[in-house]
Each structure stands twice: as structure tokens, then as C-alpha cells.
Amino acid sequence: MKKQFAVIGLGNFGFFLATALFQKGHEVLGIDINPKLVQEIRDRISRAVIADATDAQAMKELELAKMDAVVVSIGSVLNSSILATLNVKDLGAKKVVAKAVSEAHGRILRKIGADEIYFPEKDLALTAAQRLDNPNVLDYLPFMEGYSIVQLAPPSSFIGKTLIELDLINRFGIQVIAIKELIPENVVMIPTGRFVVKDSDILVLLGPEDALVGLQEKTA
Ligand code: ADP
Image 1: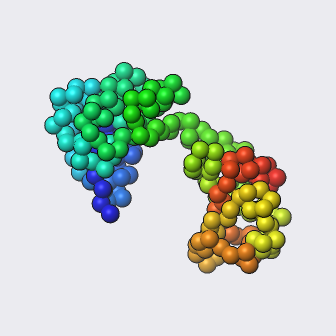
Image 2: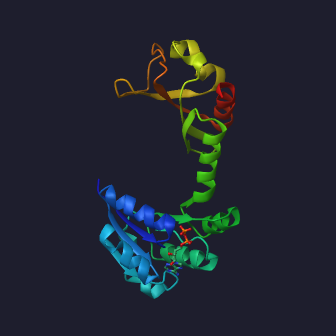
Image 3: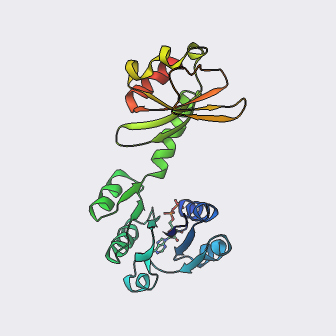
């Protein structure tokens, strides 16, 4: 379904986020104080405007309350990030997502009412560390507090075994939520215990972070 988003701050993160949302078929309004960035993104999203997000009056004209979500992607200038988030909250935005560059920044944004906080650098660093630590781990997605979803190339000890034999749920509290088969290309959602793991499969696992890390260490 087509949604409406506003992205405030078209630096690296905001720029990629806005264009990616537009490519997914959504309506995207991009806002930045820097005319060059607004010019650059103009043809790649629905609408781009030059505005200072710390200026409550200017923000009022952008009808942010009708957006499904407003993302404040101003990282480095702390007071602008805080003021912009406050303005967006005051204007009645349904969902406010804000980018933080540090834990302290994130705590402030949460206190003033941001519904969700992104830590792009930290999250990417965690993913990169996971991949470097164990190349079997193809993807790592923080889920709810303490839980993650990982995509794991099965270690050799898994090959030829059924999911019942592996019994990851009872041994580690880890659920196999899907298996991506490469030959032929196919996704088995919520596989049954009879599924036999092949060398060419990718396991998609959901579980407590410490259990997933433990499993990866065993399989590294
Ligand atoms: P990144 O690391 O993703 O590039 P930055 O924090 O460096 O993120 O980028 C912030 C962006 O937000 C810049 O493009 C900057 O011009 C924009 N910006 C900063 N202050 C304001 C403001 N008050 N109103 C609107 N945009 C702003």
C-alpha cells in the first residue's frame, strides 16, 4: 500500500532513505536547509523543499501530520536534531523516527517523544562485526530488545540433518523461521521438522541474541 513519508535532513542517510522509499512506490517529501541537496534529490522523490526544520512556522506549512511517518535525519547538529524532532511532534505527526549519533542523543530524542530511534552507524558496525567475525553469517537484523534474526549458511555439521535432529529450539531456544533454497531458488517459510538441510541452503533464524552468537561461535 502506498504510504506518505517525510524525510528531514538529506545527508547520506536521509538521502538514501528518501530515494529508497520512493523506489518502493511511496510518496516522499524531502526537506533540507541546503538548496544543493534539495536540487539533487528533486527528480528522485515526489517533492523536495528547502526549509529550516528548527523553524516551527516553516514546518507548519508542510502538513506533516498527514504523513504516515516523519523521519528526522539530522545527526551531527544536536540542537537542530532536537528542535526539529520537537517541532514535528508538536505538529501532530503520527509517527516520528529520529536518527541519533550517540546513546545520549538517542535518550534525548526518546524523552522528547520520538517513537523510534535509529543508530545507523552503530547498527551497521554491529552487522559488519558479525560478518567479519563469522562469514557464515550473511545478514543480521536486530529484532525486539534482545532478539535478532540472522541468515546463516549452515555449518558442515548441519548438512544432511533434519531440523528435528538439529533441534535448535530445545538446544538453544532458536527457531528456524525460513529456509532459502538456492537450487532451485525457493523460500520455505516455517519449515517442518522433516526438512533436510543442504549445503546450498541459507537458514533464517530467530532467537535470543546471546544464543545466536553462541551458535555462530560453534559453527565458525
Ligand atoms: P549524514 O551523516 O547522514 O550525512 P548529517 O547529520 O551529516 O547526516 O546530515 C544532516 C543533513 O541535515 C544535512 O544535509 C543538513 O543540511 C541537514 N540539516 C541540518 N540542519 C537542518 C535544519 N535545521 N533543517 C533542515 N535540514 C537540516
